[in-house]
Length: 291
Image (cartoon, rainbow, N blue to C red; front, side, top):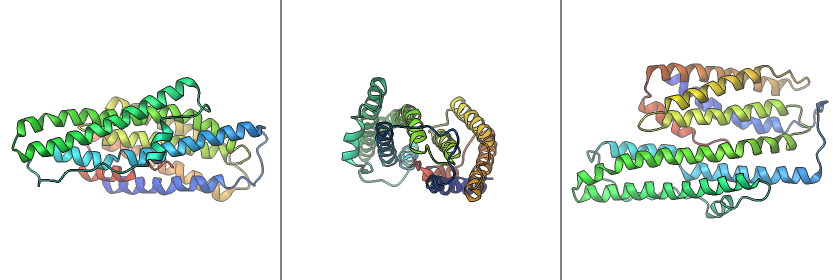
């Protein structure tokens, strides 16, 4: 089962890449329900997607779940692991970080406030997480294990907060991004299928992040995300066939089949009540690959 889950996760990474291949098929027969958008609306949608893609790229490099879990795993050993030097946090784009804390007027006032607040809190929490770990290493060097051990619960809390801020950001951005994609994909006959895959991929990422959470997954929230994924899959299955695009429809059906298998296997492992280190490592390699 573990090997199957690993393979399915890697398949999802590859499958998501074809969404943009599907997006390129817009020269086919247009849908009868195609809307008409002004040049200003198209420009607005483009600005939203630019901010969205910048945010995803930044989040992907800002907090690497694999690194966070490795640090927590090291701290869990209580000084019994080989000594490490000072750890430098992963590098991220300063230009992008300045951009995301200043969202434009293509978002409403509440969304701008929430995005700015969550990004700034994420930056601060990330900085404190790595500061705590380097302090932990310093305390171990002077044999102050009692003080060092107190930093593990603090970093558990900070790791959860980082995940929460990332999720908050995506929750704010997702409806804006979907609205923008509807405009930009307006004449694409595969629009509804592409949007369905986008929704499911975002939800699946949330499932993976919950699975990786230390010291243990938030099971009620994981159950909610799994339920959401099941509903999204059911809706996607009901979408009509798009005539004239057999290859794209096959890719879409393959995505849905993989999603079904993914749901079954996550449910099976969740029922066991634990995840192996290998499974968590594989989930960490998935990362935030939604861009």
